[in-house]
Length: 336
Image (cartoon, rainbow, N blue to C red; front, side, top):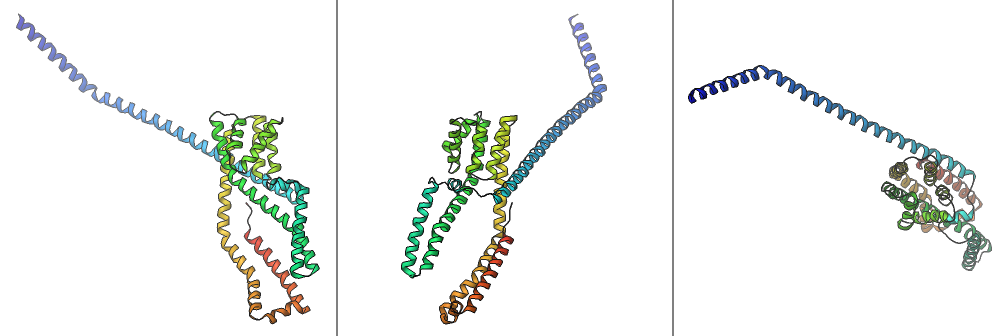
């Protein structure tokens, strides 16, 4: 009886196993087809998701490039307008002294200029013994040379500000993204920045302490630093204060535009360096040849200074040299 039960159970098990194997064999193709379909559908969905991400990333990149190009065009337009205004209006001497980074007053500047001119005139009178030469030296040393020094210091300071300004903007962008307010970001530049950006941002902080708002204090930056980049920075701050928006993105775009402009200017200077060297050599050749001829045959060259016809030749030569120098200068100078 026990053996009969085992035989029956074995037969039932074998029958079930056979039925399962038969059913699996019949349904295998269908199961595999459904599995492949599910896998193919998953890949299609994944590809569509990746394509959507790629399209979204490409759209973001295109939009960022458009905003960057718009900012660059706006900066160029603003710079052209400001350059056109500067052609018709020269800043006063007090503003130029401040832009050069000097703390002296206009009166003190004139006093030191006259003192310097008097010393130069006395030295010229003692060495030459000619009163007209001494008067000419006094005029040049009192009114020409000091203003040239102011212009040189002013241009050098503006160039240093322009080189350091993008770094300051990058620090402000990182500070704003980390959660700091705009006032704290400006104070960070005013305390830890590099000169002359640190001094100008410190003046922005001081302007806020006497009651000016942040946009008003930033707008006064252009009076001390007459650059289109400083004016555009003030405009970005003013627009953000009035209409809102992503300030970190706007400042980041401005920083990238400034760096691209700097790279372009360096590239143009490198490409035009050969032409500038050629212009310097060609412009200095007449003076070098005249000096060599004077050293070898002084009597031959002195005719230009003693004979009236030599005076006319020198005047005509000077006019033609000036025209040639101006033409070469316009040919090798490029405005971006």
